[in-house]
Length: 236
Image 1 (cartoon, rainbow, N blue to C red):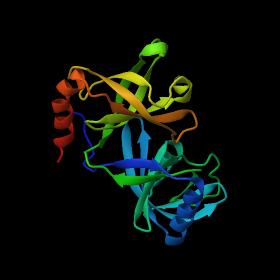
Image 2 (cartoon, rainbow, N blue to C red):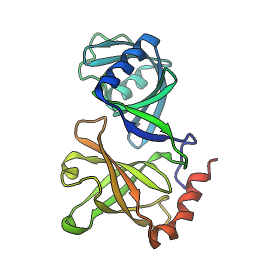
Image 3 (spheres, one colour):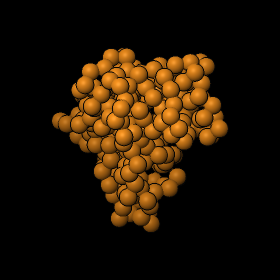
């Protein structure tokens, strides 16, 4: 089985720009501590960082535990941040600013997002995969010639979220049906499930989008539910 993080993720709902600005300003005033995840060469670096300031289009983070190697990874990898502000959990994807000259050790300057997401606790388990998992997507219907390989971000019995290059996502739209092929383990048979696009949002990198897919309830899904649930519940 692939290694699966034991913390449950949340239902994601994007908030407007006014709310985003208010929350980020409050995060700096409170010196809110964010959990930072960096996806680097197929594995994750997870750590804490305090929001200590803002600089126009950037947020300034002070790492709880920093060393030169960690700082280099954070400055060169897509980042996922989650933090609690006024008792509410928020999350967003970003990346380090291109120019970091003059920033002191242990401090990382990241691009300030134009919108962030509200994380609401979901009823069913959904967990992020620690190892990089690949999902092959293929369209049906008018665009049945479309296909691409995506990075799976998380998985639940109800659906998956994938990071897709923008050039591959140009023909996608909410409500479109795709077939998702993936493996939960390198030695396990591939699962091929029909899924419907429920969200398309900007990712932490300029050339990628995050696509949320909800599995379509059919015979194939029903036959695969036990396998999916076993993978998700093993770490409980």
